[in-house]
Length: 235
Ligand code: SF4
Image (cartoon, rainbow, N blue to C red; front, top):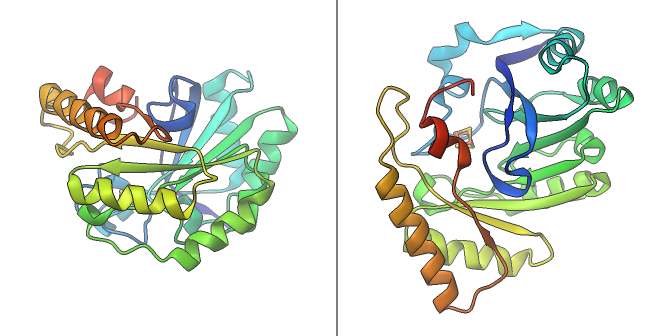
C-alpha cells in the first residue's frame, strides 16, 4: 500500500515543541481530516494540491530519508497534514532497525497502533481559533495506542485569550503530559514576509500572562524555523 507524501526534506532542525533545535528529516504526509483557520501547511491539506502528493512505498520513503541523512541516523519527523491518516508502521520499523528515531505530530483525532513504536508522539489538539472541535475520545485513544512511545507530549498553539483559557483546561485534563505552548503565526502565505514583531509581541503576551497567573507547567517557545526562514517551505 502506498503512502501519499507531500514532501520530504532536510536535514534541518525541528522548529518547535519538545524537540526544538534537533536535527531531523521531515516526511510530510498529504491529507488531513481538519481544516484549521490558520493552517500553515495547506499544500499538505487541501485537495487542490492532491496532484502534487507523490504515491510512494514505505521503501521509497525510507531510501530518500537515508539519502538525505547520508545514512547517519537522526530523528525522522512525521508531519502533515495528519500523518495518522496513513500507515507509517513499515517505515518506522525499517528506520528503527537502522538506528533512526521517529517523532510524529498529530492533532489526536485518529489513533494508530504504530504510535506505540515512536520515540516521540506530539499530540497537538487545536484550540478554538482553529475553528475545529476536539474529539477527546479520539485523543484518549491516541494516548492509549501511543503508550509504548518513549515520550508523549502535548503542544498547543495560542492566538488569543480564548485559546489560552482552553489550553489551561486541556492541561488540567492531561496534567501528566509535558505541555508546550507556542504563539500562533497568522501569516501563512509562503510569499508574504512574516511580521516578526507581531510574533514577538504575541510570545511576550503569552509569557507575561502565564507568569502573572502563576502557571508554570508549560514551556513557552517560538517557532524557530519561522524566525529563521519565515514561511518558506522545505527548510
Ligand atoms: Fe493544518 Fe494541522 Fe489543522 Fe491539519 S490539523 S488543517 S495540518 S493545522
